[in-house]
Image (cartoon, rainbow, N blue to C red; front, side, top):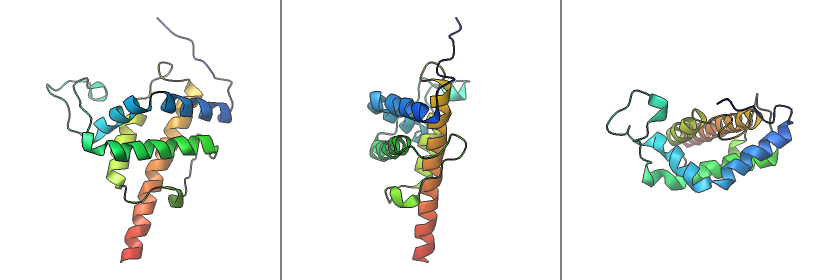
Amino acid sequence: LLQPLQGLGAGADAARREAAERLLHNHEAIGRFAARGLSAPGFPPVAAELSDPNAAPAEEALPVVDALLRHTTHALLDGEGDAGAVALSPDTLSGGIEPRAAAASLGYLRDRISVPRDMSYPAARQLRAHLNGVIEGVGAKAAAAAAAAS
């Protein structure tokens, strides 16, 4: 059964608000899902890498993933950036987040957003762009901290 794509005519602001609403609506489950990116593959192994039903979240990473998703939601609601280029200032991000944790968890979520199951196509583009923006911002903050320490 094919579902029609919704929201194709929506502007960037509406798409960002929809993406933020979807994150807020189910934040706990989304955080646990994204934390699966920091854990080992499930057992028994499955052939479809992107849809491992046996994967479990890395429980110890849930507070960090929650902070990353809060930053993503804030960036979406702040209304900055287009889906093509989102640049977040490292100064707006929490300190002490490892770039590997950000890339693994937010990348896991980004690669598994489904249209139209999860949200409209424009909202998914905005969410993916803002997830990438947070990943890059955390990396830039860690690089700046390392440069200042040396």
